[in-house]
Amino acid sequence: MSDQGMLITIGEGTCGIAAGAKEVAKLLGERFPQATFRYVGCLGMCHQEPMVEIRNGDGKGYLYGNVDRKNLTKIVRFHRGEGPLPEKNFICGSDDPDTEKGSFLTRQTRIALRNVGQLNPTSFEQFRARGGYAAIEKVLRGGMSPEDVIQEVKIANIRGRGGAGFPTAVKWGFARGAPGYPKYLVCNGDEGDPGAFMDRSLLEGDPHTVLEGMLIAAFAIGASKGYAYIRAEYPLAVDYFGRAIRDAREAGFVGENILGSGFSFDLKIKEGAGAFVCGEETALLASIEGQRGMPRIRPPFPAIQGVFGKPTIINNVETLANIPWIINNGGAAYAAIGTEKSKGTKVFALAGAIRRGGLVEVPMGMTIRQVLEDVGGGSASSRPLKAVQLGGPSGGCIPESLFDTIIDYEAINATGAIMGSGGMVVMDTKSCMVDLARYFLEFTQIESCGKCTFCRIGTTRMKEILTKICDGKGTMEDIATLEELAPQIKNASLCGLGQTAPNPVLTTLKYFRDEYVAHVKEHRCPGGVCKELITHTIINKECSGCSICERQCPVNAITGKVKEPESWRIDPVVCINCGMCVEVCKPEAILVQ
Image (cartoon, rainbow, N blue to C red; front, side, top):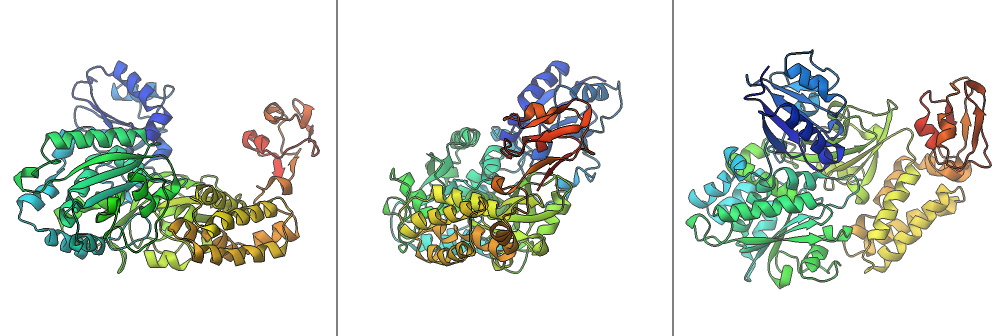
């Protein structure tokens, strides 16, 4: 079969490149020299990277996952008509996407992510071919006033996707009516939650949509200047968004007198240095001004007095990515999706003990269980799922018994967690809830700017207590102290970091108190995680005598003779409980208790 007319699409987002997409692209180029190649952002199926779609000259497409040098030959042979379909790597076809693997995509509703993985993010022409910048043209050439735009967004009832869930139209209305010139529009791409990569994928995979959302928002509030605040750890996002600004400026969509409408808007990228607290809008504004990223007292709110003392609106990347769709399709169409108080869709990053890790966009109203099982494929380890940390380090831990909770701001808040920006860290039964709370508390303690005493000192004390409990030295009084400190930190902190920092501790105490008690009273870690409370033992009847555990042990605590299973032992005095032996033992012959 000839490769003439063949279109090969390769995912080259950060996850794809990290998995080896560049090498795969090179090898495919050598094997199909006459094919047309297209490079796109992350489709969301990070568990399948590197991903390749091959469309033959007849237009029929085949999507493959986990492509590498070893399995590429079978894929090439199939498309040359020399071999069978490589079932192991095949995900779905363009004519039949609803396969078991393809259900990850078919069970989503993609609005913010509608273009991600479908176009070359650096191609202005491809974006225009998919209807790009039609929304801003509709606004500027269709006679819409700023009030008309705000009204359409109000009908959509979209709430900010950065975490707080404040109604976007209300926020815009504040700035629209605020006195002062110039006004600023800021895109908040400072995504710092562990396990979250929603903003990164949007900025890498569809930067023009985010830019178009900024243009519409700027027109609505009367802003003439803007900033895209993107953390420097996202070099691809910074590069692609910078290219999008340059291409849009050349095409007349950025700068003075846009499309001859009299509306002018220009912007620049501000790279953040990675401080988690700069996700809080007043700390972000301080950073843009060249100051240390620390929160300010509110009021005045940024919509009245923001960057450089001027009226400023800060919108999250995902929020802005929805705006062009709302303008093109109408606010009512967006409001038709979701629940009574939470409209539209929400993007989530699935990480942890989940079979299909990656980025998903689902309608509000879907349950947590449906997201994790129907879309995410359930547990990666085949062990039962135990909990999900929703909302990042500022969120809370939701147990499996509450997985039928719907995706809705109020419903999630009722559990003690928060929607947050959309990180979902999934845990199975081999997770320790006390250790999890310590991990997230330590993160917020390190990232605290230090301005508020209760946040600076209180989170430090809570981390010390959690470490004490994980080491088997805790008391019941320590648990009581955690519960006493938590509300004081929440109530006495200036910004959202301190106000939500105790959430992981409070929710794990609420739903998994028995694990805290087991650590304290029984000196036992139910999840088999806390090193001071566990032992490793070889189950000789399950052992194959292969010696791989001995070869991987960093402290030589394992002894035995090859092919003599009954001879293998782990010296508890020498063992440091690093867990390396468990990781490499294929027969699962090592007991952790």
